[in-house]
Image (tube, rainbow, N blue to C red):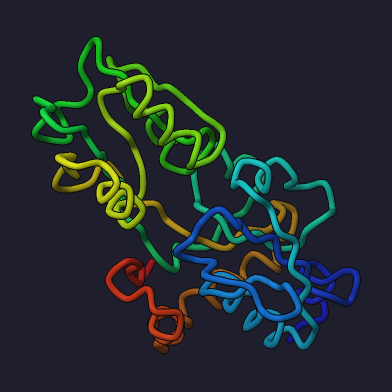
Length: 242
């Protein structure tokens, strides 16, 4: 392992891996010591192993908070959805997994397709600064985005304010649909959130190593194995080769 890579990615001798605790597909539990467990923490541990250093997890409740801390020196790698706004400060690998994002609509809704949602007068409930919120901000032309902090608050707002659609990751929407009799999840997706590994943009050697690591992890079956290990088969998909 080139010393330049280790120096960039583990300047303190430890790989400090920022983890988005809000993604229940990538963080599925905690160890007895309190460390996060799941596909994302395991990816970070594998990266640390390849670097020959220990891993230390830096947890964030929400992805926006993790992204805000980029470049401040508090984490070395961040496992988060890759979005253009975030890429201004973070050098991302290709995605290692993808998660479909779509809409939940209430009982009796006239909305039938993804395209139906982006119309004048429509109000979309969305979790602020999630990867799919960033996508909607760039792409929604006529509907209005109604943001809340955190998934629970977003769902509450959707129900209590009788909003027209709830944007979210398909697996999470499936669980919420069970709480709302007559609600429907629209077919298809408006985007697929690309979960990737990021580091500070000035870590050029480190970014190249991470890029190659992620591509090999997909090719070798490591990512598929982690999806099976953490029982999220059918909810996470291995991303295509870059």
